[in-house]
Image 1: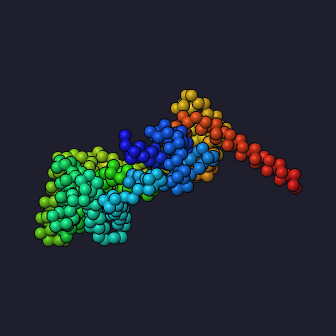
Image 2: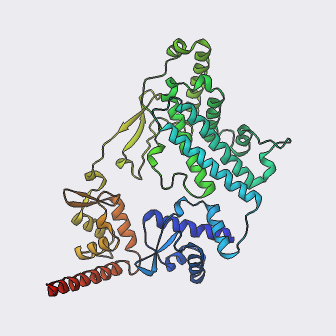
Length: 415
């Protein structure tokens, strides 16, 4: 395994700790990576400490913050600066610029689409999303085949169709989706009209999810790290697109082009039957890990042509089903080697400052009574596997209570 691959393993471990809000030690990183403890300490102290890694409670415990939004390339550059102070080559710098601009175009596409007051938001989304894909595919080509692969004989940048041909297989649903998106951009004057938004949104939703997956696989970090995942929901409810209405408002020429495009879209969707092309029948989109806890889910009508958005108001009784005693029982059920009592439970709450969280993913206070989520129970159970994790919480709370008693006693004596 190469040095870069080892560093990526380190980045992945740190991102996982950050995503789970988990406290970690050098020994935990040693078990997750090929590095010995002295190398881990060197990386932390020379470059990561107080920038992406921070002390937590003691010098042996750490927390991670900010690496979820840092790409693999940026992390490797950070590591090389710590050890070798290597200057990236011109192509490496160009690759970083391409991926950064691709991310900017993707984010802007989502922002304009989620702005209802913008009359040309469908057109703007299509143009920016195609641009995001073009930049990402060219970054891939640059990395794998060098600068000459993204320019033609006249030193002009290759068109997106050439990049698609070189990077995506002919029958790939992702390619078919992107080709339809490019067609929309090229025929914007006829196809990007408000009446088509409902059917196009199924295509748009698929391309957003496809881009997110491909960007993460290429760069290493999620394009929406630290941002609202709700921006991913693009599928709209609305009336069926009627060609007769299009003809009445826009004329015969536009109606013929729209009719041809919709027939092609429907045929391709049926043939591929893939959520990577368009949101298909029985495909459900959940913006949380468990679909039964989703705030927004997507389905289609019985004819398979229209997509509906179903909004569900999910109360804390559903998202945070466990009261304190129920959470303790559930933790004990899943961790037979540990029998948690109320005191130890509250020690963990105190040490990790969860008591201050009144409406978080982990803890929700309803009618002055705290409730806990499935995510909290999983987090608690996983951390119980760490040596000393529970004991350190108990000691921390005992020290705190002892200090409070001393303060109160001193205050009484001062009166």
